[in-house]
Image 1 (cartoon, rainbow, N blue to C red):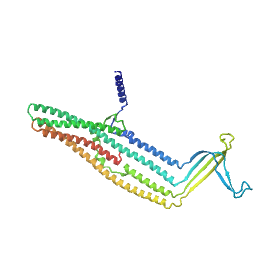
Image 2: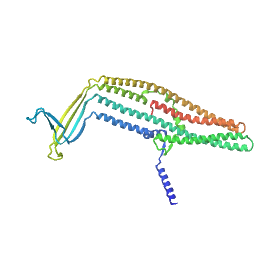
Image 3: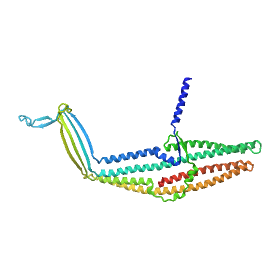
Image 4: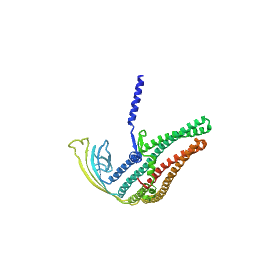
Length: 448
């Protein structure tokens, strides 16, 4: 009994802690977009890519700035390397053809020094500096592209949640209305005034509504979690949407917006293709620069010391200073046309990038026309769906009156109901389509 109480207490505490960890959010569509641009997982990593590119740019810049390196070398000669000397240099009385073996150096030695090096001229370095700026620009463009994609995903996900919520509201209303009609019809059947088929037909329709209602509730749960994921939230957190589907669709009914001219240079995909062409141009420039000479200089300063015993830490140990200045010039002369082949490859790659930029331009113009057409059609579709809904409601009311008065069959009434339910869903979907199609159009013209 004691163990059960402990277990129950543990579960209660765990549940309270889990509830405390959950957070609650309330967002309009604009607020949801702003939150996602800061907290979406891909948006966070896109910012990190820019930070890494900035560090890469400085790494490239630093390669041409002064470099200082220090070194300490300790050498212990266990066995000396012997050098052979011909003749009798050390013993005049010896045979001139003899070989004398001599060891040079001391048992132990230590050298410490500093080297200052400076690149004076290198064509590759100059191109690398230009390329580092292009490299950073690429990730800035990638960040902007990611933002446009995140914005579109949030709008679509937000609209799907609103669609599911409105669908549930309508289905519950239809279920309530149909349940009352079914109850009245059952009473009429019990009195023997109508056939059983009328009751059965309504039961079939009611079962279909209940099934759709249960499925839509499950879809709502999935849509909410998908939206939370897109926003960079914990999917277990609470999220309340403050915008309504009808108000959002109405605010997006701006047909004149689609009549604005399309400036292809503003599209992020075009900018990235242009950036790619610039990279290829720099690669060609890099290959050409490799035919230029390279000039560098280095200054060395240090001390060395020699001893047969390890006495380098002694105060009276003698240290010998050395210093030197060196300048190196490297001039490419002949590479068996290897550099020429690489240059030609870079030129071909640049020509391909130019063609890709032209292709991207034409493709974006086509996508704009398509998105513009679909957006305008969604507005027309919305007006049609709204009108059809009004007509379907009137037809369903008339058929219900006729059915109640025995002037219409259950088949005609059920057909009017199905027509109404379809019109309701079409109307809701048409509102979502307006929001989504405008988001797609805004993405192409790069409108925030």
